Length: 85
Image (cartoon, rainbow, N blue to C red; front, side):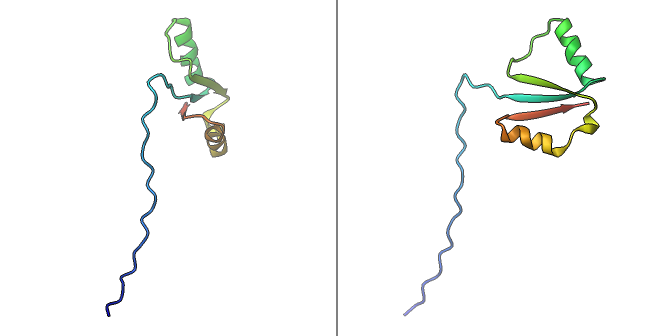
């Protein structure tokens, strides 16, 4: 009688799901007050349009940003984080 070979369980693989056509990702932009936020402010003065799903947070300096803030944003449902300094 032959011994049965042990079958290794295959890991569950997540199948990517296509996003609905009207879906827009919520992006949190963390911008330095003196550099990147000034550029975003200038874009507003020049009437350049960007997606309303982008939220800008002004920081005193991007050096002040901690990894906790980025992880916390994802925990609260943000789809992407953009750090600009």
